[in-house]
Image (cartoon, rainbow, N blue to C red; front, side):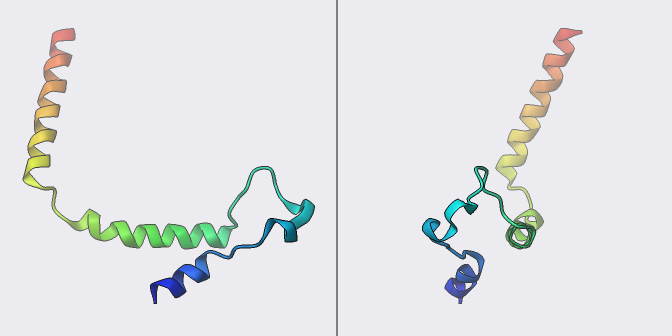
Length: 75
């Protein structure tokens, strides 16, 4: 089923068939951009709902403390 979804997303057109229609700056149409955005949001939504691992929380806390002390040294 995954390959079917991928096939719907990527429609490959040979360059020779396009002729002079190629744009020097390739762009995605709005429908493709929207579809990619929806899929990225769906993929990362689960990730964003997970709690931050304790090790990362500790590292963030240390970084925050280091930033505070460097600001105090500047004052």
